[in-house]
Length: 522
Ligand code: NAI
Image 1 (cartoon, helix red, strand yellow):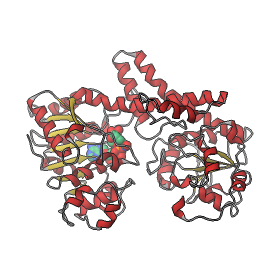
Image 2 (cartoon, helix red, strand yellow):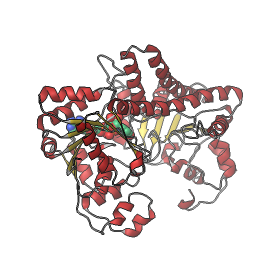
Image 3 (cartoon, helix red, strand yellow):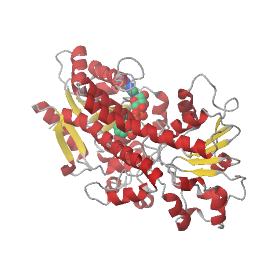
Image 4 (cartoon, protein in one colour):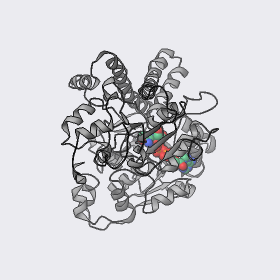
């Protein structure tokens, strides 16, 4: 089979950067270059502070990019990112590079990953549902014009089924008669656990055309993965199945969240407990326990857009029933946020005028600084309609600039940021909560969780734990409860039940007259 010496990855984002770094780490003989048009992003990848936060990513990038793998003791304490390095000497040749020289790198490579953004179209035909292929088309055009004949092109981006054909058409239009191989290799990593997911994937899907050159190309890519993934987990399949299986996987995961959320709405009206239900049904081996936490619903840059893409695909194929079925998953997701935001308003006597709301956590889940498609945004949007005096947001990782960008996209006309608007982004949770009338915990950051020893309170609040958000108030807040005036702030964690309405920080503080605790018990 073809042996890959130089790999180019177009797109230095959440997928391109970590994926390229892990491949480089495990294939020291392959020169891996990640290219992007965004110079700022490339410079960040080259520098000390990587542009994205993922546990373990610094170690992997440093090892492959800088040729370092010393500090053995530190590595040994971690259970990923290391076994490959441990096998090697303490110094290796750097083989991971970041560059803005897209065309030159494309021209020098024998395999090219396309991991550019594929968001939902915002205007024109299929707006709100169809996939915006602009970035992908641009990348393929660059490949068509500059790549050597025979280069293997790998779709890493999530794309609609049949995109392989579109890529072929673009290549043929720009380089008639020149042959390229096209593979589909969808990425299943989750933000927040990207390195772990890449290091120990459940499976690697390789979609290829059933031609000799297609199989050869797939074998070349399989060899790169086989450096650390067992062959039994590398599955070569038909290219269209491969494209569609990524959309299907995300749709099925999101569907479970919407399904349990729909049950949470019934629970709140009946006195049944959604977490008991989730636990009970999760013990059924056919159902399994994952993705069954009721809450604010799914967020992040993928689930909503991938389901939208699936519904658009179904509709374009003349299958309106299929489209309507999946559309309902999004409808239920919106319903859940709406319901939560309205319960916040109603528990504050249906008016937010003159009141302050603290929001702890903005990211759609813990351990990521990705501010895109956060459920918090929908909640904030609804709260803003009630003209609150202020909304103070604290998130340990999302940058202020990213949050502001997301908020401004909701309403570009009115100024919502302080000093002229009500919203402020603060750098610590105490400032956020000070003088607030309600504290909403919207991300499941560990720092917002209760200490293990606080069983009584923990079980009380964990009843309402949900996927993508935290179960309770923050521990540190409780310790300092006497230092910050939080007059009867209502603590709200979705999904909201009548029981929780009474829980105030004051009550909690009374329940927990604890001395300050060392950080390790958090
Ligand atoms: P991202 O937006 O973080 O990164 C994409 C990068 O591609 C950007 O830095 C952009 O500047 C660059 N780019 C766009 N066109 C380019 C061109 N012609 N030449 C050079 N650079 C170009 O996107 P992210 O999150 O990494 O997603 C990439 C793809 O992976 C999407 O299709 C997404 O659906 C998929 N995916 C994302 C996952 C996630 O957790 N973020 C997980 C699995 C798949």
